[in-house]
Image: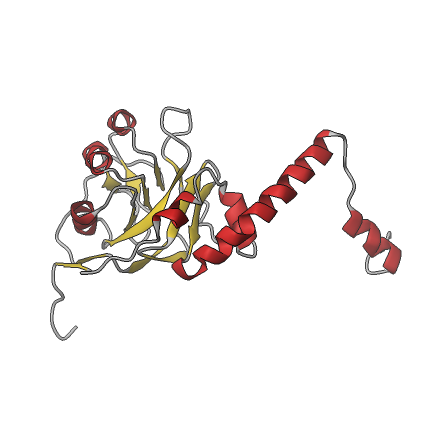
Length: 231
């Protein structure tokens, strides 16, 4: 580097979807969103709910406020907490660093106090009983009691790579028991437009399966036209 970057950079104008767009994702399963995005959109499977026993909600939705930390760092997350708005999901990137917590119970409590809808990180978390007491739904890469640092450099409100996907501030985050789906800002309206058809198809297939349906028409057609063979 020619010169050291600032310890902390916070984007002056933070993009967020409209409230109507945000509300359209309430209660929508992550699988529906991936179906609307050609089967893609989820973070890597290592990002899971910190709690699955029902103590914390297992669904959260809201615009991403990206905190781009360095490994073993939390300065960006501190900056994100400072500028967060009600309904935001703070997405804390630590570039896959392991064996060090990216947030604990106090962070979760303060995010809850700020009105955040949830927390997502590719790092680990700590202070599990306190996380449960805070009541904020969170998704992470496991638990570690080791402490992070806050030296920077760090960026808030921009974008970051996290668990195999690039997330920009303002993208929609929807998280549930299956994982975390990311809807890029530019695709939000297109995905919302597909949700009724996906819901209707899911409902129809569910009803058929519950009535005993077990056919694979595509396989039968392949056998009939010769693209598949019995050997």
